Length: 263
Ligand SMILES: [Zn+2]
Image 1 (cartoon, helix red, strand yellow):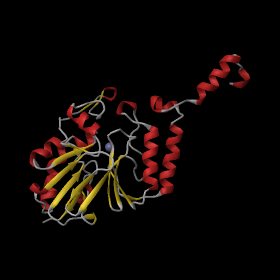
Image 2 (cartoon, rainbow, N blue to C red; image 1 turned 180 degrees about the vertical axis):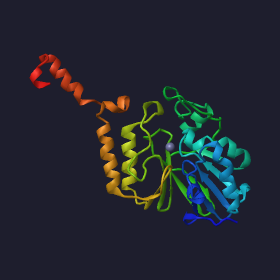
Image 3 (tube, protein in one colour; image 1 turned 120 degrees about the vertical axis):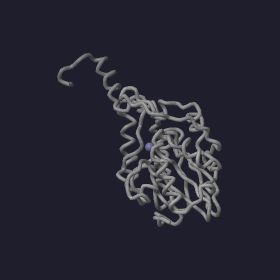
Image 4 (spheres, rainbow, N blue to C red; image 1 turned 180 degrees about the horizontal axis):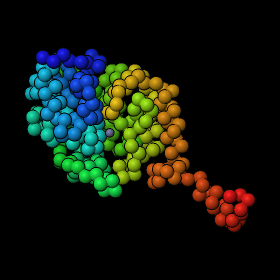
């Protein structure tokens, strides 16, 4: 048996377990013999993840849930493949993720970014259990509380387990956030609300979907919120911004006519 390199009691993260980067963070939570996974990543890492799980002496038949933090291809492409070896595990996600993955929406899931020549497989998967804000996912003596934390995408969920928050693509250790993109359904005001909620909650640790685990730091989160507040008024963020103050200035200048001394 391979030692279980727990990051917190009964929580294992597969990149930390492998001691190398496999892809997005894949969390295994267990209680007694039962276990669940939060995200799975790309298809091509599924065999290695299954080997690691077997090596740590978890029984495949005891996987209760496969959770999708959201519907992006880098988090869920491997779901259909892992479901083949874990047929009893119930697939879980936000209702919007259910739709996106059922219809294999290639744009919203980032399987297809035509302008960058990105086109990768996105196997269809039927998420069996839709969950939303306030729901609980029970695993033995553990209870994960579902938080709906939209912003990066509307299907973004976080999962709270005691003083831990599996925080998805809301925030990374360097203060970066998940991609903001109109074609992805990103919403900056929602994003700010989700970050404020995380800032104000009493969890101690954030377990993100990319990069290292980190301690929740309200000051650092506030810096990120302040940055996103500026995005609301910047043309750089296109239709994700709510206004562009330069347009008002322009309106005023148009009324007065071009004035070289003001330009
Ligand atoms: Zn992501």
